[in-house]
Amino acid sequence: MYPELEGKCALVTGAARGFGRAIAKRLAAEGALVIVNYRRSMSDAAEVVAEIEKAGGKAIAIRGDVGKEKSLDKMFDQITEQVGELDIVIANAAFGVPGNLLEATPHHWEVTMSASAWSLVAMTQRALPLMKKGWGRVISITSDGGQKVIPGYGVVGPAKGALESLTRGLAYELARKGVLVNGILAGLADTKSSRSIPGANQVIQHASRHTPKGRIVDGDDIARVVAFLCSNEADMICGQFITVDGGRNIVG
Image (cartoon, rainbow, N blue to C red; front, side, top):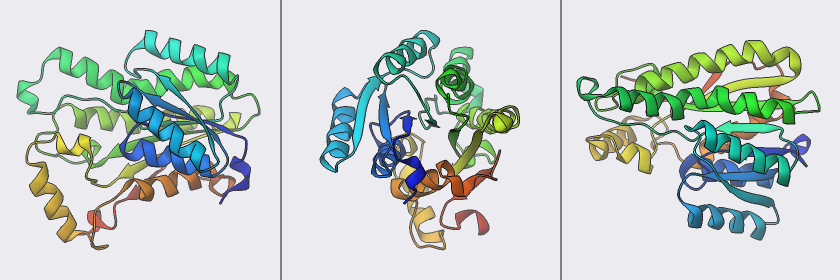
């Protein structure tokens, strides 16, 4: 547990399910007030809030599409009105159009880059005025697709690569302001997003058999590392990506 997170306010995007849900619950368990962001799944977001409150934590649900500027403005207006400050931003939400690159369209590119890459900068710009204590954390969530070719990943891969570069750039610009920016490279997990990739079932089964830890990643694995990066224990980690994949990347 990290007592310095008690009383902090954390925005977790895409928190209605998957990694975001686990991250939201972990930060709430650390004592943070968690803003459970969702795009469509209002009932799922309400369920996350209820689970957090049942466990003794604090959370509110706020709708917002991170890939759309007007929606972000509205979301941050609500954060300002309802909370008034923000200490932690977890850029977990991502949206992309999988498929072959040769079948991609300019629209696929624009919506994927907006939601999965530019949103990190857009949210950080809006969050900074709310980080008034000279202390802040911004954490992005990426995947192997930013560094390797994943068949069927399409323009999502380039968007992840851009997200990683933007994470490093923001880390450089914000470190002296007391805001640390880092990322997590999450290994394959059995999520709705991974299931959208062609041949997902075979990929998941293969990864399960060939991961040294003997299983693929789950949300709690990612949430534990997020909590660490938010803590003061990670005070000298800046602009880095921690790989959480059970050792999958070290084998062929």
